[in-house]
View 1 (cartoon, one colour):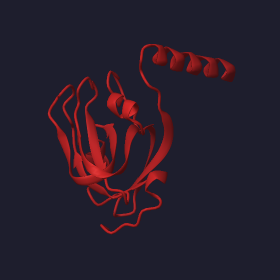
View 2: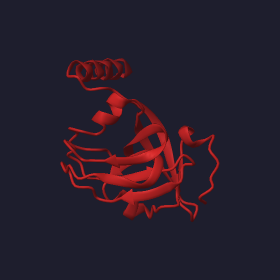
View 3: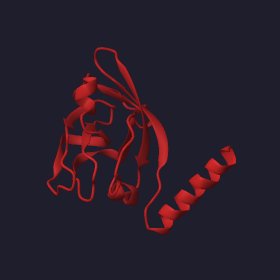
View 4: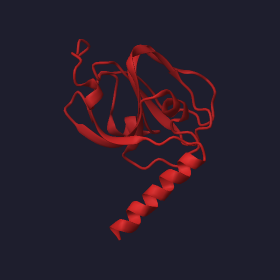
Length: 156
């Protein structure tokens, strides 16, 4: 049975590449709220230009506890959009220290309106719409992931 799962996964990846879609490495992310609660997510990593351009476009669903972490490698002002994105999302804009700078909740599928960070950020985490409200996630909370490990936290 495991062999069939591996073959199916490989076939799915080959099919996605044949259609021109890029594939993504997956990783674990923890969101730690200021009151000490921890929320685990399994995310895909968008770390290069092609991956960041594709993002979550054309997907009809996003599993609970899943998301995509866009890593820009350095702090810069970021603006996202929802072009060709079917699933409504919450977008968490994250500083180089892993601290959430701002959150855009319940973004509108298909919208071309820019969704900006409130200043320079290193990364953006996209999760299902309503997740931040349901879990009480707010600016000032921390994202725990390897891309933020070497940066001090002046904002907390």
